[in-house]
Length: 299
Image 1 (cartoon, rainbow, N blue to C red):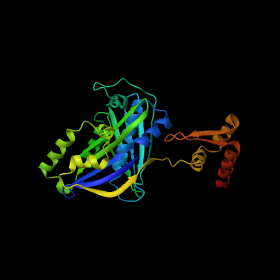
Image 2 (image 1 turned 135 degrees about the vertical axis):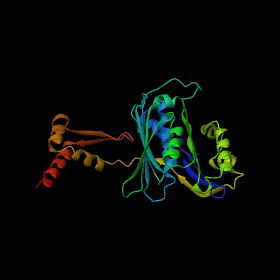
Image 3 (image 1 turned 120 degrees about the horizontal axis):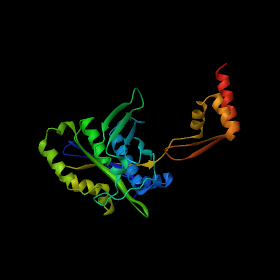
Image 4 (image 1 turned 180 degrees about the horizontal axis):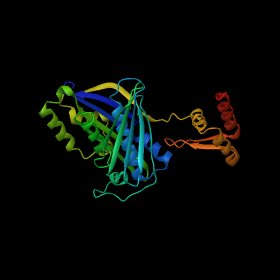
């Protein structure tokens, strides 16, 4: 099944539901960053979370940055997702591996660390981006993003994300976001019913691995609550907007002396994009051109 995102409503618009499948893009990221099992699970969960968060934004060009800094061996994690369905991300230490946790699952919480912070930045493309910081709850990412939604956006929410990765690569990855809208926030029975159904789920990836589609998952959870699945299916993908021109712009910021030093010592400069690991090489001629540009700017 191709990576996709679908939206739905239930309870006369009192419930908003979004589901996303990220299996292929997570496998692509795994290979691109040469990640361990636990690093793949962490980044896959974060990418699914960011896509679910940005799905509620309205303005074209909107983006969500999700950054996690815990005290675990994985180090930092950064994901950037757009309303256009593109997402990219990386972890600081992609080859960290840990034994399974007490439940026999990948120990994402141990890799990320349970002491740290989740930083979320929402950017609608103009003005100052909205940023928020919350303490990590478990380091498992899904719990932490749910905590952000409840504390920072004050929206009763349930977010489930998961990644199944084995010797053959990523075979299931995605997430589900359920939110009680303001018009229904005071309906205690509705909130309790939704909480009970979510608590009965063993996770999100078991549903995908059993062969269930996103509409089937929605029907199981909300089919008797006036479920309406919106017709638009959004295709999503791992995409990085880095270019050689942007790399040259970044190199230019080093200034004339540093550029000359690069020419003398290395006969050029190599730059690697953190998000996609694309390698760019600027030879001495390119660097000389940058020096000329800088000299022209000072005249």
